Length: 375
Ligand code: PLP
Image 1 (cartoon, rainbow, N blue to C red):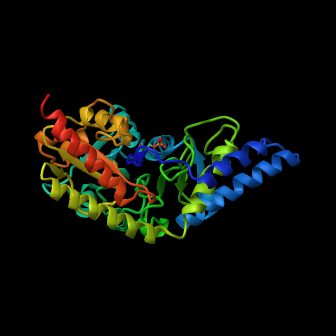
Image 2 (image 1 turned 120 degrees about the horizontal axis):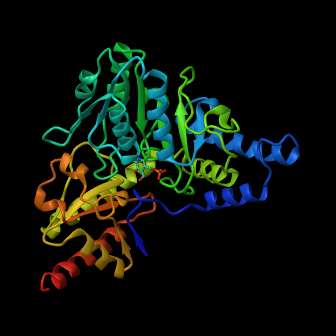
Image 3 (image 1 turned 45 degrees about the vertical axis):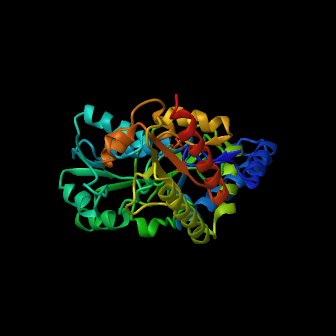
């Protein structure tokens, strides 16, 4: 099996599986006062420490959620609830994942003014374009670190630090899902007040994620109830998933730069294969993460090719997994030519991907170019 759809989800690593099992064995409710509860609470505390350490922040600044969708919803609606009565402007980009874009659309329906920054003609979003969109009436700036369809890296650190200098009260939120554990993501350098994370993109389990909330910033909770997660996220903690998340983080920590270098090699190999083939183009060549790559195969519709490759046990995505069947507005934002849009495949690597995976992908593409071209 050749799995090149790691931006959709990753294979859980052994440590994460063991972590989940441990969290199932230690079955107490972390809120219980007796020993069973305390044992479970210790596991949650340990996982929280692992996530906090990876981001270079305090343990108290990490809150577990059901995934990045919940984290981003909490960030956007929380910022609105805390500041939206006094201020009205939200600054974001046109290339956000729906987990951020849809809650911001909702703020627009509630009366906020939303400024959405588009990439320029070369597909880049400059720090200046984000900074210049912020005014005295702005309460939230939300922009992703790595785009999930092209791998484009946004200048978050530069933009957010300048915004904080000029407008210290503006809340900055960053969806770091495709950058976390792949690029060296640290709270201090990002200058974000709120950061969304997801475990299943880093070889952890699905249904668990995190929200970093800068100490001193108060945002109201989305989920109300028993007051778990210091009132930020009520509901009994999913100890197994939290343990799996923490274990995945620990398994990846420490080697981020070395893995990044290796995956850069894979990105170069992919570019060489595209050039050799002649009928395959790379769709985005700006400042990007090597983990996510968008290509177009001339004359072969994405879905047809995706299913052709699937029969050969090669798994890729057409655009992004959550835009199933729908045309991706994000690719158009990146100025990807219309003729390439219907023929786009997303090739996304994990640290375990190899050059021979890419060779097998291209062998499959070449067969499709021969066979399907005659139909
Ligand atoms: N943000 C980005 C950039 C993503 O790629 C994804 C998942 O595809 C999400 C948010 C949502 O993450 P989750 O599945 O944890 O809700």
